[in-house]
Structure formats: C-alpha cells, structure tokens
Image 1 (tube, rainbow, N blue to C red):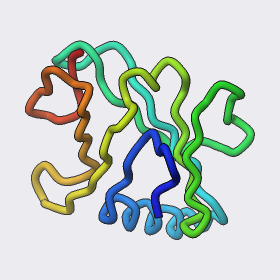
Image 2: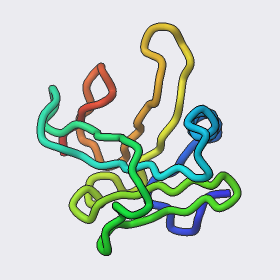
Image 3: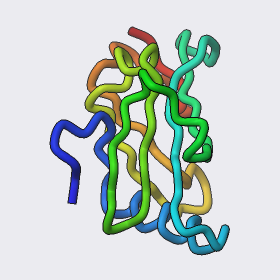
Image 4: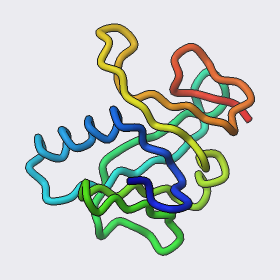
Length: 117
C-alpha cells in the first residue's frame, strides 16, 4: 500500500527486503533515509541508510508504510532529485541489491547508483 503522493515508490521486492532487514535488526520499526550527494560517475550519487525516528527533521518528507512499520525519509534538498524514484531489489549474485530507477535522471551510469540531471 503506497502512501498518497509518495516521494519514493518502493516496489514489492524492495519492500520485502526492507521487511527482512527490519526483522534481522529485531526492530519494531525501520526508518530508511534516502538522499543524494555530489560524486559518482555521473555527478550525483544515491545515499541510502537506516536512520532513527528522532533524527527525522522538520523539513524532511516522510512516506509512511504503517502496515510494514517502515518510514522512508527524504531530506528537502534531495527531494528535487528523488521525487518519483522507484526503489526495486534484485537478488542476482552479480549486480544484485537495491536498484534505483529515477525518472528525473537525464543520464545514468552502468553502476546504477549514480546519475546526472
């Protein structure tokens, strides 16, 4: 169940992986922070990390998935670049892991974790 106006669209496989990670961490809830920083082969690269409830800032955008006990948080500066991003997951041995599909990116690179606008 996607929140209305979700900033990040979390695909079923990615959501399943996040659930597994939450269970591994034995946490009641999971705060996933996503953003961008300068660097990477195309100029900007994605940053994805676990955060804490108390680290959520006033100007962060928060997508809540109450059924999954997961929150996806994006800082205001990254919003411009990440709005509409699709987060997917692949368990292939090579090139597996979380995948980013960004409709705002004019160019992406082969590694899939860097982009240019």
